[in-house]
Image (cartoon, rainbow, N blue to C red; front, side, top):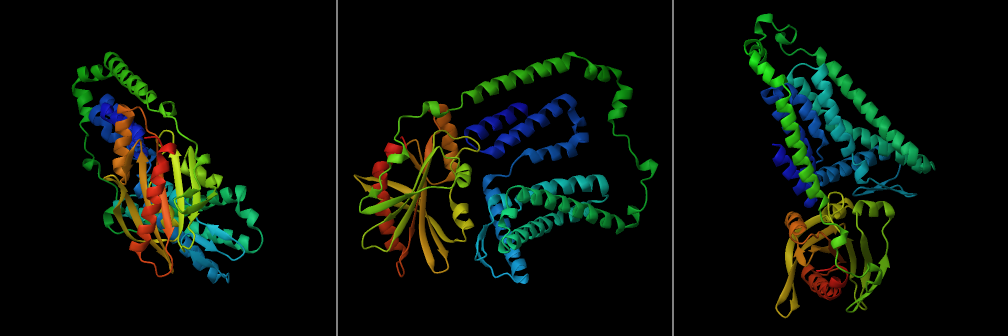
Length: 450
């Protein structure tokens, strides 16, 4: 189990899959307990389950939950503001108050309440509730509590902003309300537990387990009947040998992690500062990302620009973040959640091929997006060490493969989104976008090494 878990740690780090990394750490602890205590590990099942909360959710699950919770919290907060007499317009996770806009970002989605509240519900249920049904009911209340209280926090922020006290909704006050809301949620969970304790569904809930029902677990019998077994467990030889073996495994795996590819193996490239603002007939204007968003992007270099073409109603937005190396919390990710968080609805997603001439072509992922009357044809692909990849999972595989075979994990995510002109069909827009990407492809290798 320990060797398998260390393998997960290596795969998670090299493939930038944070979930596998922490599953491996958790698995190492479980493996150590299993090796040292054998079947007596069953007495530690609940603590080991609690320890499993060190494992972060897989990115696609995290993005899905975050997106849904952001929309739920935004919608409920908007309703509360309207009931309070505030004129408000909701656009996805953006709440427009007229005088200002509130954006419900990932950190305020409620997911940071949900996971700790699940943990808290397990602990409260384990120590203060009897009966499986009570613990299940307690867990059932976690989601509505987290969404309602988070919406209440957004509502307070909106009320303060509309009355000219927007500065109170930031910095220390913002952090304090987050702490206070979680304390209130914990108190509500404990109150529900006390109420559930008063409910008796069966007579046996009121009784005490008879003494003759308490069975010997067999472990004590083993100690009583076999003193040799006790001596073998308490002896020093076995623990010393096991400890030495485990230390050797950890040192070996640590050395392997030290050899993870880094920016030292990056081929020479040009900085995005010199990225051309003219691609074919398209003229571009550079723009810059706010530092808060840039911190979440994890990019080492990037270019963001908007391109226009004379006598054309189309606009193309380009974003190319580049990573000198990739590991957990420093890697490219597919843009669906970013676009959907802005209120865009994904109507179609499919792969399309672009002919580059001379028998060459590249395949990229396209997305049809709609918001009101506005339509966008989005596209993206991972450009990783000469490979064009559309699947995030295949990208993870090549990250692991190239880290061993090339000692490199550098690469970029290439995004290009075209705003459709009124009455323009998707096929017509694709012809324009494909031509632009063909021109982009010619200059891209200067900035993203093959």
